[in-house]
Image (cartoon, one colour):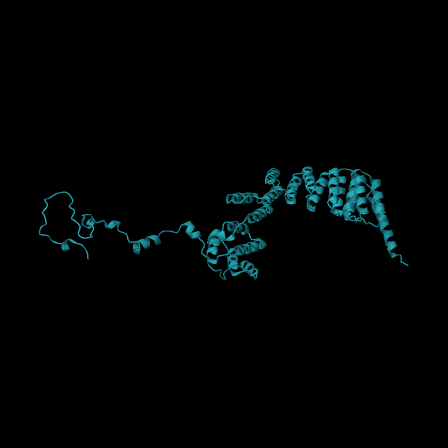
Length: 419
């Protein structure tokens, strides 16, 4: 029942109030609130019903507004149809047969992705919302993108790090940083390292070693040294990878003696470097013509249990050749033969180059005759060195005559029937 003026109860004892400007409040009856009887102006403009449908005018007004750039770029998940390029079709056809449907769905979208459809971040967000992937799915997609050498691999990998379903750990960051380092993308690697620290991950020895290797490859010795010292401050024993990365940094910087200091430090800690570190150090001394350094490293290689081959012996011979020590180059050559190694034409050429450098023609001829007696033939590289040397001496014609006579004797010897 609605309370109004017409259904108020009448009273014979009702008093007549004189005219006044004051507001008159009637007494309430029963449990009715006296506020109902106050004279208050109605404000229809403040009335609002939440479930009231929008008017046609409002709808038309909203439709008339142009889409923002963000709305236009927002990715809409649409299945890949047949209207794609032949190259994209071939890439999709090469996807692993055992790959799950949710992974294939994303791979197809990435293969056919173009910026006009939206951002890559929106694409991955849509995939997460629709497909509900797990970590294994993310890893399968990243593995396939890496195998394909897809240009969006690194961008997808970095975006995956932010997704909760990826369950990122520090090794995931290290792998991407290492990938950037291999491609000399130093700035991206440093940015990711900063992001990793900002997200609460603490750099460990593996990650910092990756950075040392990257700085070493980029030729930035200062940053490599700073990062190496940061590894020391972790308070853990350095492993051979950390040492090896820093040794390679010194080698690339042209100061192998500092790398050799670290190599001796490793030996004292019974940490044994890989053969590639020894070879790189020997090569560095060889190219510089530091015969003593090359001999020290060559001896260290044998002490480390690494059997020298013809290539390592060639590096030692070259060190003596560059240093102008032809006799020691010859001794290193003979030691190689005594060890049972077959000398390569490169090693023969290096000994001849050492004799040429000191203009010891007689020694070179004795060396060649000794090789002939032992059935070791002179190859192309050695022949080229001899030809250039004899050309400088002006005896090219005489040498050609001797070589013809030698060839004739060899032919005659071959035609003699064996008994």
